[in-house]
Length: 348
Ligand SMILES: Nc1ncnc2c1ncn2[C@@H]1O[C@H](COP(=O)(O)OP(=O)(O)OP(=O)(O)O)[C@@H](O)[C@H]1O
Image (cartoon, rainbow, N blue to C red; front, side, top):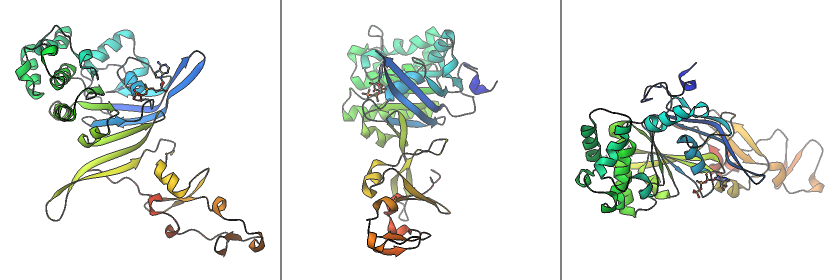
């Protein structure tokens, strides 16, 4: 049995040796009143330990469905989901409780759902430590409140804190038991822009200091500016990704560089960005050409060619501007340069 097949090999699940989140061909079908809804349609996602990733997508694209599976609240209909070496498809009820207590932490959108209203900030953070019988609780609570920048509200109850302070205490509570992965569902949904920025920075700081992997599910496209990697989900599948890194120019000035990638699955399938499809009128089929360092994608010349019976001769093809041999090939200049896909560069 491999580590990935073993649910909850260890309490912290930090040394499993693979990606912290791995979804392979994940499917979730809901059946209501005889109607089937495919919320996830073969979703693939890989998140490495320590990464902070935003998952964005339109309403109904499958974000909450994915989060429910990753948090152990729901099971996939097909495919495979592994978090910190734990196979989520084969957990018993006891293992699920341990998984939710030790392997993942959650922060929900509703500030009221994250914290016990009758406990202070310090008591809320201490609660998961108490349940898991952790030692040195007082020190851990102090460190976490300090790290999240909310040490000054340690003795206040949620109703006596701002929304941003509540969400930062919620993050401290979620990471108290040192989980491998922190899952956040619209964590800034109820906050204004300034407060959202503080909470996102706190989350990134927690990831850097504690080594926790963070997946933030959101509608909010501005969250993307705060994370290194944004994954777009469309119709129950991951479709595109944006990776950001800083580059220093010849004058020593730092620039944030964002590169968009299209996700390709294990069978080699990929979805072209809709803007490219519209721009070149791509439909039904395209012609591919393998070059040493990229693949070219061309519109179907047969379909686009105007029919001119007078010039049509057996064994030759007629183009809009003349006749050419069937062996003739389009050159890169024939097509919009946007249709040329280069392999992903190493992101430094
Ligand atoms: N319990 C359910 N029963 C039936 N259909 C469901 C259920 N939960 C979600 N769906 C459907 O599955 C699809 C994906 O829903 P999901 O809630 O995952 O999307 P989402 O991206 O989180 O949307 P939002 O941003 O609006 O929360 C939608 O078509 C939704 O109607």
